[in-house]
Image (cartoon, rainbow, N blue to C red; front, side, top):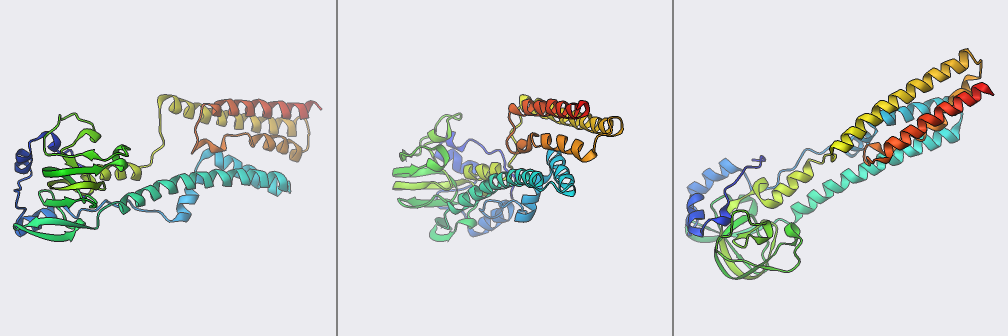
Length: 320
């Protein structure tokens, strides 16, 4: 299962209550019950989001109205054989796409790094016997045994701890190992203060213990982080949304004004079309091409300056 669920606050329950809530016991699950739960919950693996090919990821960063304007400008300047202007415009467009591609690639690399932190094997009690299994075979209710040097294979509610310490830097940023025990903590305790829990992907720094699996796969804390990385979205605040609408409408307005001035200069002023177009095209280089990956309050200012430059240059050419 890949959907994240709201789980009970096992860290706030006494260990016996947590065992009861997970329908488990200290000697572990029976084989038949394990098989049923594996079919219900699925393997203990982080879900992998569908990946696009590198080419499609790169091309997606050209899907922007401002990029369309610049590509059209580059095409016309190329038709007029103004190669320097064409090269500059295309260079800006390509650099913008490369930056967006790199940013998206870093998110995918972070997800791969998270998967590399998961334990490959785990010691578990089944039918009262200690066995070693693939970590992907763990299910909620399994009893897992851990000792110093082990990578925690799932989120565990501790039921036994002997001098247990864990390094949780990957989740909390705390570089010093934290003490772990079986005593419950408050329900609203921060992640780093949940001393009755061991979390998937963290490292047992000292001691030994056993715990009941409380969450697997996408339901673990590290699974939730992986899920957030898999849904890379542009941060949208009310200010950014308002600037988005303003910049788009202003860009459309500038293009309409520029087209009107081109028509006026050509048919009324009888000026060469190539000169008129180049006067406008050079100013289109000021459009906010990095608008997609790097939205900022300076965008509106740049677009407004562009509009005034277009109008000034075309009118100057007409009066000359």
